Image 1 (cartoon, rainbow, N blue to C red):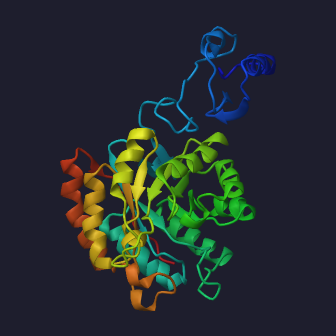
Image 2 (cartoon, rainbow, N blue to C red):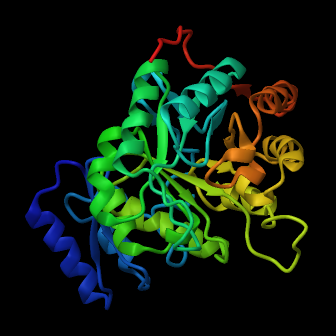
Image 3 (cartoon, helix red, strand yellow):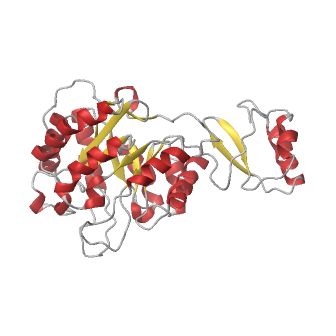
Length: 346
């Protein structure tokens, strides 16, 4: 519907769809009301196109609607952190780096200093950590959010962090620039709805046993709530091979880019679980069309409270960034560079 469509005009379109045997659902996107149906009826499009208040009719295929190329043919660009932040999609290649889990002020300061010096465009760090074992470190929670916010203020770089329950969305959104939905919560539909309505961009990780279609339909939940700032993240899927932690499916990056207008980033840390594989897979991700990377960095991986076995040191991360640049440029893109700034002390 057009942005100035009246409630009466919207109701009229819904009635027309019901007369065609369809069950319309109302959504919002970028200030406009959407009237969406999962199925189609022959001849309905012609009737709708002449209805008052209708801006355009999109004939999408299957359940994938707002995320599809039918809805938006051009690549979406997702801005994170305001005008001085980063933009995922387009010509820039965004590297997001930091520890898997926020542990302490000293740990965060050391890691952040290292990744900023090497050219990271965004910071990552988990304050809430959903873990397979109930006895594993679950994160610092609200105290971790405060440490993340401190680093954001100190560096000026945008921060992405995971949210694990619908009840926490508002608080996490206040302290971060982007919400992350982790692999275990990709199909937590209540959480997707809350995150989609938060007003913050969302980084949606693929479930470890999810098909590409299921991944894209999870993104559909976010966009259905009016959130156009959705970024997909391929983080590896579970397979029979134990040589790596998961199997990094780079074909999914190319296929997602074909089927959707959303930016796609790759997590080479959680997918491989091996520091020596993070560099090669980072280069491969850039070569296959990814829009950025999400890399785990720690200043003392052996003492890390979460996923230390996969973390890069500051020096290793700097080496990856050096090797990454020519690959990014070879595919016609540039490494996203944050505006020059000096770090403040804490």
